[in-house]
Image (cartoon, rainbow, N blue to C red; front, top):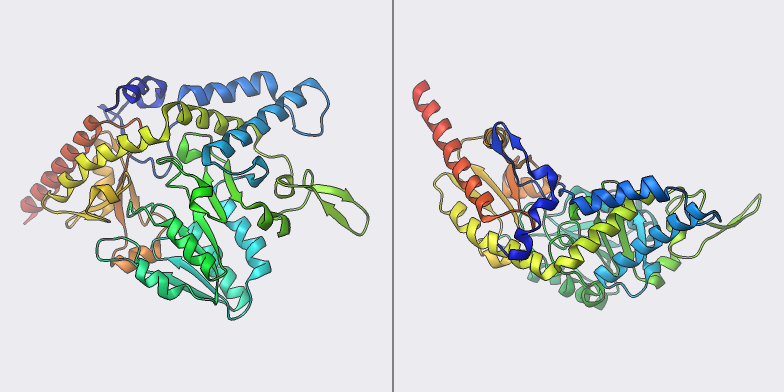
Length: 415
């Protein structure tokens, strides 16, 4: 483990506890990450010293809250290398951002006979909005499938994306397979046919350097809670020319220019898409999380997780009775590892691991079309982050072996 990251473990008080009399090993980071003291303190400080509504107030607290809120926006802009802060919109989360694009850009630009292309590995948040938009508009929804190694089939993508395609929406990294998708190539392909590329960055932004200008994505959504920020806050990045042409997502305070009895005008970017009182404290907390990750450097985070995957994945794949899904090459894998134990339901596996203090997720992971494609109903899933260690990986391996032996022994006794 990188010595810099080793020193950070004390920043996460929640990890210093026992679960079922065992040291907690938290491996459910794809669902939500833990927060360091620096984020918790930023939230407490805001509520204790600066809490007020933003933008319109002229009193001191309102001005300080506004400064905190807009500083967080600029931090995110720099973190993802967006050209300008006005292209960074605060949302409730990644799901909210994707729905915003579908409900505004999608409604205005999709007509009967048009095509929307997504991948079979999409989280429901980046599937259902497009599915329902296609149903409403009489458009066709197409799916890019996978290679035998669990990677997105780029050759099929080249066949599916045509001049009829108006939107391509793909996860930058899969929340089940651990697959990192070629977003930059897909964006180039989409643009060649006059389509826009919508990226779901929920599983990418917390774990690797992301440069939206280099990727040339048109829209890119992600959530704060997966990158150690508060829940209920997220980001939608969009290119200015697209955002300016779009209608507001919601109506009310903050997002207006001027209101007459029979008509209204809208505020400039980004406020046109930030109706009502936003999650101000959440934005401040997200800014603190960005500060934390920036100080570490995302290349260091990515290298650390890759080191853990290089260690853990081959050992899991070599275990008898363990089936791992996704790319077998660790270098093509994020820290998300989906797996099943032979003849055991994933929920039973997750419960057994929890008895050993190891927290993993089990279920369909909001990716039911992918499960059906793989011929599964559910999997267990271990997901790593910067505060996990090789010792955590070893604990998972031991707990898996003990789970196998316990259930196999029980099965033999009942025969």
